[in-house]
Amino acid sequence: LNFEQNSQPIVCSEAIQKAYSRYRVDFMRVVPIDEILNEMKNKEILSEIQVEVMRKDSNGKRDKREKLWEILNDERSDEDFRKFCKILQGNGVKTIRDLGNNLEIQANKFSYVGERDTDGNSC
Image 1 (cartoon, rainbow, N blue to C red):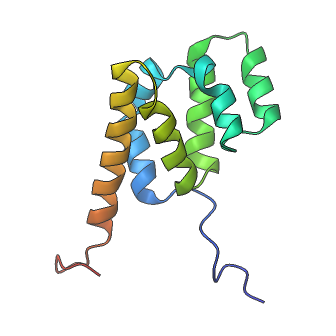
Image 2 (cartoon, rainbow, N blue to C red; image 1 turned 30 degrees about the vertical axis):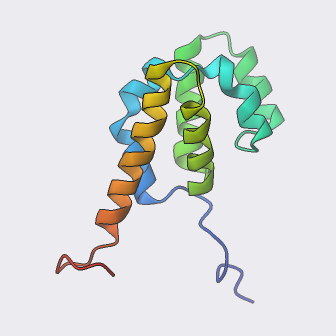
């Protein structure tokens, strides 16, 4: 049996990884890690254990953001990326909403470029 036939990739696509990389500095600066942990658990992006570990992390918000960035970039799907963007876009702070919008826009741009063949035509 081929289980991969109808399943989505478990890890993020290259386009989304590029979007994360492009906005890494902003991610580390503005993601309101303590505010969004519950919502990320409720949206099934993070497990309860991951949330508990991040809450107990006494090394500061930067380390929590770094861990979240690694999880999202290395261990989560494109669907999780979209959910994360929506969480940021729903925040009351404009800078955080802008990051959510920018991540999504950039991923879409990279996806579009990735869908073009070497002749510049869409696949």
